[in-house]
Image 1 (cartoon, rainbow, N blue to C red):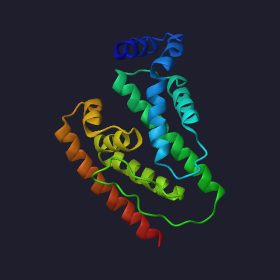
Image 2: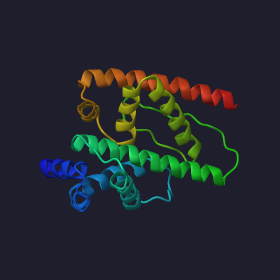
Image 3: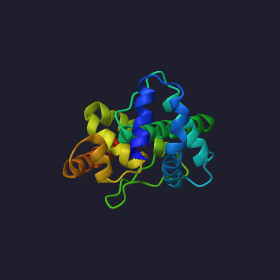
Length: 192
């Protein structure tokens, strides 16, 4: 199956428009699992459903002008990024409908590779701002956070996608968590 996905991704990269139709059945279940995992960590009553998240992410991936993926891992990393952007856009939309709200800390646990958000979309937006700043400072560490936090990948899986050793990925993770904590704490203190 991995070879089928890679073959179809190569066809899409080569410009075969019909290959996009063959891709969805091959990756749908894994994308849906990824979407379900991501949404299970969101606040209760989230308006997005896993199916809608998967379909929107898929449309963003195959509907864009530039469609070039090196391999299956690269495609799923792009899918995780697309899901992250959809959730951020959704949170921004919700925030624009509300006024006020305090920033809150976003826990980045050592034991679990994901955090749980409360009902406040500000937490997700605060993390996104800090993650964008981290990407400007250290792109690979930021990519690791995206893969683990938004993509639900383990250290070993994320290391494979990034092409680094698991030990290096663990160092990036430790560094990124500390960096993001300082950045988010700074935002929280400034807003008070």
